[in-house]
Amino acid sequence: MPAIPAATVANLRDLGSLPLGGGRSVRPGRVFRSAQLDRLDPTEPRVAALGIRTVVDFRTESERAERPDQLPPGARVLVADVLADHLATSGLPPAARLKQLLNDPALADEYLGGGRAQDAFRRTYRAFVSSDSARASYRAFLGELGDPRTGPLLFHCTAGKDRTGWAAAIVLSLLGADEETVLAEYLSVNPAVRLAFAPMIEGFTAQGGDPELALALIGVVPAYLEAALDEVAVRHGSMEKYVREGLGVPDEVTAVIRERLTVYEA
Image 1 (tube, rainbow, N blue to C red):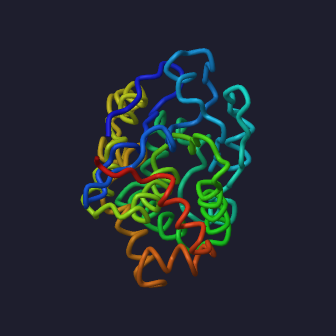
Image 2: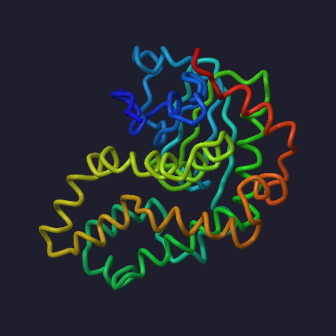
C-alpha cells in the first residue's frame, strides 16, 4: 500500500485498494491512517483532496497536550486513548521520552536493552487486545466506521505504527484480508517511520548505541503483531469473536463496515 506523499502529515496512507480475495478489495477514499497531525496544513492539496470528516486520535493525554492535532476544516475528532490504563506498567517510555532515549544510548540500554524493548512491545500489543482502555478505544473506532453517516475517516497515534497498526489489522481482518495482506500492510509503515527518525538513529548509533535497539523502538516487526493476534486467539478464538465479545461491537455494525469499505471488481 503506497504512502500518500503529503508534506505536512507523516506516514499518511489509504487502506483502499488492498486485496481481500474473491474479487474484492478495500474501497478507496474511505479510511486513512497516519502519524499525528500536529503539522497538518489543511490547504495542502493532497490533504484537502481526501475530504477527511472524522479524526480518531489514539494518543494519550500527554501526547495530545504536547502536540495538538491540526484538524481539516469541518472535521471532528474522537479521542480514543488506547494506553490510558496500561502505559504506567508497560515498560515502554512515554512518547515524550522516546527522543530523550534516542539521544542517550546509555539510558536507552539501561531501560530497554537486552531484548527488553521487544518484550515490552509484545506486552503492549497484548494489552491492545485485553486492557479496558484499549477495548473501549477500538470499540469507539469501529463504531465510527460502522456509522453510515460517517464520511472519510483518518485514524492515528503518534508515529502511526503501533496503536494505529493494530486498528488497521482489525479492520482488514474483518473485511476478510488474509494473514499475508494484514502483515504486509502492518510492515509497510517501516520505511516512512525510519525516514522520519533517520537523524536520531544516526546520532544514536554514532554515540555507540545499538542500532537494533533503535529499530525496535521506532519500527515494527512481525513479532509485535503476532503477540496481539495470539492474544486474540487465546482469549476469543477468532477476530470475529474478539470484535463481537471482546470489544462489544454488534454484528450489524460490523456488517455496515463491510458494506461501506468493500468494493467488488466489475
